[in-house]
Each structure stands twice: as structure tokens, then as C-alpha cells.
Amino acid sequence: MDNFDIVIIGGGPAGMAAAITAHQEGIENLLIIERDDSLGGILRQCIHNGFGLHKFKEELTGPEYALKYEKKVKELNIPYILNTMVTDISEDKTITATSSERGIFQIKAKSIILAMGCRERAKGALNIAGSRPAGIYSAGTAQKFVNMKGYLPGKDIVILGSGDIGLIMARRMTLEGAKVHAVCEIMPYSGGLARNIQQCLKDFDIPLKLSHTVIEIHGKERVEGVTIAKVDEKRNPIPETKEYIPCDTLLLSVGLIPENELSKGAGIKLSNATSGAVVDQKRQTSVEGIFACGNVLHVHDLVDYVSDEGEIAGKSAAEYVLNSKTRNESLIKIETDGKIRYTVPQYITEKENTKIYFRVDNIYNNKKIILRSNSNIKTFKKQKLLPGEMETITVPLEFLDAESIYIGLEDL
Amino acid sequence: MKIEMTCIICPVGCNLEIETENKKIIKIKGNTCPRGEKYAQTEITNPVRTLTTTIRCSNGEILPVRTDNPIPKELIFKCMDIINNVVCILPISAGDIIIENILNTGSNIIASKEME
Ligand SMILES: Cc1cc2nc3c(=O)[nH]c(=O)nc-3n(C[C@H](O)[C@H](O)[C@H](O)COP(=O)(O)OP(=O)(O)OC[C@H]3O[C@@H](n4cnc5c(N)ncnc54)[C@H](O)[C@@H]3O)c2cc1C
Ligand code: SF4
Image 1 (tube, each protein chain N blue to C red):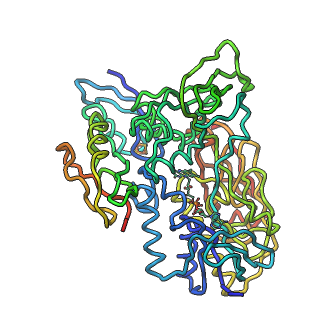
Image 2 (tube, rainbow over the protein chains, first blue to last red):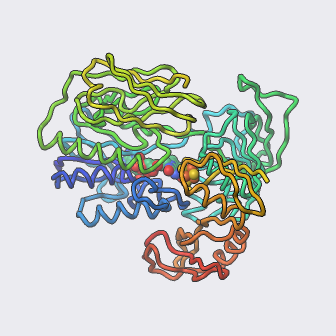
Image 3 (cartoon, chains in turn yellow, green):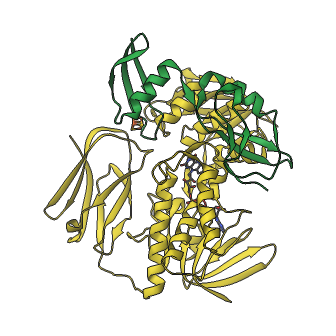
């Protein structure tokens, strides 16, 4: 069996950043395993601009952002294998993978970095009446068709869900000659960025129907139309508001979830709030020596933060291998009020500079974020907090002389 | 005249409240950085957008491309027509110009990926 110091599973922006940093920290016996035929991850199909504003101070497209990292991986001669899917990892860090070239094979690692990204929520999870004719796609699948295969999945489109991928696809399909009749969002607000509502919907006069959902899909072989309706505060459809829209395609943009089947196999503890692993500030999971970063850990809206997280995981894994460092078991718990849906990391194991990423559960105006530990208090004013946007705060070192720290929201 | 708009220059997406006289801004509220005002002025006089799309290549593959500078918003669909009637000859590197000075906008259509 081949032995590696670090094996990185997934060659998207998280995996590439982790590999580059681990290499820079002195690890040369490492390997990236990617199931696709090229590095880059989901960025390969995100051809729009808006990536890299934080990290490179310029607006790049997804492929351009990925290329910067791919070039670096090649420049440093970091080994990677493509068309290879990891099917199992065990607690003792044996990795089972399969490729058409090598069949099923196993390798062993001192440390593993999980960077498998996320997948879209399945349509089966939705409860819409009607059969399931052809013409129903997830927004990400449609994105792959249009941007990588050059094939438009339909001409008359309705989109359910107003997350960024849905908004981006509304514009993309309009540019290619399709008519997007409506974007329906069950919540009273959009989960997408304000700039995307402007440049993807308003620019093209595409109606955004807030507090609306699709209640029925019509058509036998192919989608012929959908019935939409307004919903009340409890998200129940109001029958009098039913409206039929003829269309041949329904795109679902109803959210992403971390892809954690492998993590479960290794006995890694997962968080209910993020669907990703529970980690400390080093991005170390509950299994010593296994780290996680990027969308497999929690769904990010900015790839820049994904790369930052990859760097943290890469550095930590290198440290673990080089110093045979065992985990410090004295934990500082991070506690939150209900308004903060989750934090990453969930706990801190060492007194070091720590940036905490978190999301709120609703829209809040004019609040202050309170950070408290023992008698230390720090507040950060916030005009607006949105569930769709990740927030960050940096914890001052003196706050870490405690058993727990608390983060909450209060009125200004 | 009073106008409200979303600044699209960065992901913050500030909501701008603007007062104008003869298409000149006399008052602006809501921008958290100076780029917001610049955006608002352009948006009032000549709105521009970066266009990202794909071009078919000689080997049938699909190449992602973009404008290197924003183009007037009203020319977006005209540009799409031109781009969709061009076939790109490979190999190509990221940043290579594929269509020069499209519709006399001073903006080029450039590749955003390498392809062999
Ligand atoms: C459809 C879609 C569209 C998106 N659009 C945007 C956008 O427009 N803007 C934005 O900022 N963010 C977008 N995101 C979020 C974006 O994914 C992240 O910003 C970023 O790309 C995440 O990087 P990552 O490396 O964590 O995951 P990914 O980019 O998803 O990379 C994960 C990689 O792991 C590989 N992999 C997974 N499982 C295995 C396995 N078992 N064995 C081997 N390899 C494996 C995958 O093939 C993939 O290459 C989108 C996400 C999705 C799903
Ligand atoms: S005003 Fe500045 S901070 Fe606000 S969206 Fe525009 S560029 Fe971003």
C-alpha cells in the first residue's frame, strides 16, 4: 500500500489551497485525489465574474480563479490524480479509491484533508404535487449543461428558489435566448446577493416573486407548466392566489448541503446546523489528523473564504505531520444565542488568533454582535445581517483565557 | 429626481439613495465606499455591465469568455449574437483576445480559460 504524509480529497479551490499551503510548510509527500477529469471543482462551471475580490483585489470569473491555483499546484509539482473517486476512508486513515485505470485501490495517509465540496439538495426532498416529467433540473446541473456542454435545457423557464446559483442561471439562460418567466422564493426575502438581484433579474425584467412557491408540476413526458401560489406566514400556499405558468423547464435552486458520506464512514462527528464536521480553529475534525475545509465543512458564499479555510487546514495538517502533534484537549466552547445559526469553528483548542465565521437565522437590522468571555466584552455594530451572507469576527487573544466564549446579537 | 439603486460593484451591494439634477448627482446616501458614487453616476448616464458567456471551439468544446471592460448595457444582446456566431480556434490561453473591440465599444472578448 502506498503511504503519504497528507492526502487531500477533492481538487476544488479548498483542496488546492490546502495542498499548496501544506507544501509550502514543508510537506512534499502529498497527493490530491479528484474524481473529475480536471482540477478546479465547481468553479469550472461558474463562468460569471465576481470571484477573488478579497484575495486578489480583482473580479475574476470562476475558471480564472481556479486557474491561479491550478498553475501553482503544477508549478510546485504537487502530485494529483484525476478521474479517481474516493469511496471510503477509515478512522486509521486508510483511503479506498477507484478509477477505471487502477480499479479499486487503497492508500494510507498520516493526515487527510477533506475538501469534497457540496451538492445540491435533491428535488425528491421537495414536496410538490404532480409527477416528475423531464425538464426538471437543479440549477447547478443546468449550469453545467449550458456552460460546459453548450446545451440549453429549455426555452421557457421557471426557477424555484432565489439563491445565487438560481439568480445567476436566470441571467445565463436569458442571455442564451430562453425566457425566464419567474423566480419564486418561498421566503419573504431572497437568499441571494442584492447585486445579483439587480444584475441578473432587474436588468432583464425577470419577476422575483417573494413568498411564492411551486405547488404543482404539469405534464406527462415533459414539463408543460407549473402552478405557483403565494404562501402565508407559515409557508402554506394560499389557494386563491394560484397562478398557472406554461413552461418547459423548472429549475430548482433550493440550497446546497456539504457532501459528507465519506466523513460519516470515518466516524467523524457532524454538526446538525452545518451538515459538516464539527471542527476546532485548526479545522481538525473529531478524528485526530483528519481536517476539513471549504464547502464540505459549511456552505460558503464567497470562494475567497473557501481558499482561506483551505490554507488553514493545509497549515494545520502539515503541523500535525511534522510535529506529530496531538490534540490539546482543553476546549474553549463557543456558545451562541438562537439568532446565530452556527459558528465555524465550533470550539477552540489553543490560544491563538482565531477568526470565527457564522451565519444568522433571519434578516436583522441595526444590531450589534456581542462577543463575551468572562468579564471581557467586545461589540461590533451591524446595520444589516442576512442569512445568505457569512459574517466573520476575530477573537482577541485575551478572550481565550476562558472555558467558553459567547456570541450573540443585541439591539443597538 | 430621486432614485434608488443597488450598487453592484462588490458583494456588499449597498442600497444607494440618490438625488439628481440633469443627470448629475447632487446628493447620495448609502454607499459605504467612494466606488458607489462612481457606479451611480455611470448608471445614470451610461449603464455598463461585464458580459460573461461561452464560445464554441473548433473541436466542439465550450470556452468560457468575458469582456475585458464593461460594455454598455443595451448592447448585451447584440454582443451575444456576434459571440454565438464565432468559432474559436484552439489552442488558446486565458486572457487571449478572441473578438477585438466588439461593436466599437473599446472592449475585447477574452478567454477566461486555457484550452488545448
Ligand atoms: C452548483 C454550484 C454553483 C456555485 N456557484 C457559485 C458562485 O457562483 N459563486 C460562488 O462564490 N460560489 C458558488 N458556489 C459555491 C462554490 O462551490 C464555492 O465557492 C467553492 O467552489 C467551494 O470550493 P470547494 O473546494 O469546497 O468545493 P468544490 O469546488 O465543489 O470542489 C470539490 C471537489 O471535490 C471533488 N470530490 C468530491 N467528492 C469526491 C470524492 N469522493 N473523491 C474524489 N473527489 C471528490 C469534486 O469533484 C470537486 O472537484 C457554487 C456551488 C455549487 C454547488
Ligand atoms: S458602495 Fe462600495 S461597498 Fe457598497 S456595494 Fe458599492 S463598491 Fe461595495
